[in-house]
Image (cartoon, rainbow, N blue to C red; front, side, top):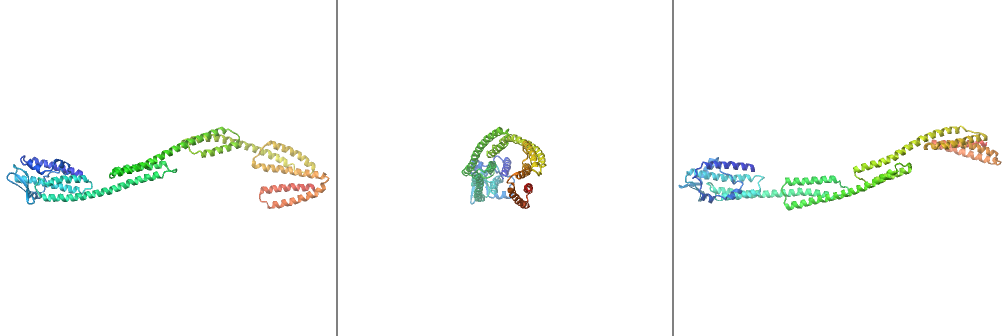
Length: 472
């Protein structure tokens, strides 16, 4: 709308220039008349419609109607009729009456056109109260006693009507501004409240990076709001900014404290882990497998409790600790594998000896038992020199060797009892005990479902049967 006004003003200025260029020099208003009826240059300069000039394309009917309100006397003086009175508006001594009336009538139509332009301008949403006031002031000066020929009362009536519309427009603008102001304050207050909520919610579980991003987004919203919305009153804007800035300051201070505490914790954790690494390096070459394994487990527990030293630091420290632990545990595993291999070899040797021992029984006489005992003693001596066997096989082969020893011992005991003066007395009692024990073993074997336990009971029964056979 403003650009169109500028264009129209330039067009009409050119038209006036062309019109006046063709007017005789003598056909201009007298300086006294122009000074008496024209608004001051300062007033005209301020008016947005001040440069609206005459147009050479006025409607002939309008022009004739305007001319009907004026006359020209014999001296070329132009008068306009206002109600019941006449008023001099200028002198054109060297021009015809028609030319003089036409010039002043066109000026009337130009002034009316200014009022029409202002009427249309009042319908615009971009007009400002200051523009309304300045335009009204300028038009009021021009319409007060204009040096024109036309219906002056109608012109003044139109101005008064425009004054009412201007007042209504200003009220509407003020109302719209108030509503826009209220909305803008509410929107900016919402941004502030979000920032304050973030600041109030800070704590041990705060995600500082995410919260920083949220504050950054709110600040960008604040800046965008300043650029795109109505200007808020300075006092209100300053108060809201103080709250927003305070929330950001609270966050920044809390984040700095958190960062300082985190750095202190990381430094402490780093120092602890470096001490753990030093201890690990001291024991990594130890061959005290059990004790050192326990120490490494303790070091691992301390490592977990030490906290974090930062991703890069933790990765480097862990690599050092892991290297020391791997040195020890790889050596222990190699030793275990070697022991396992040796124990398997020992098992094979003992099973070979066990086959020789089991070949010594059964024995029936005391002499046979005596010979078997000598051979078994040799086997046992070799057995003890061989060393450890796998733990899961130890009880099995020891039990089988003990069974051979028990069978030989049973025959030995029987042979000794035959030479004992009290043997007969004890024989009957021992025989009864063996038979009772055999009966009890039969019951246990019948009830037992575990194969290993059942085999052990059967071995014990076989031994007692041999004892019983030996004394019968």
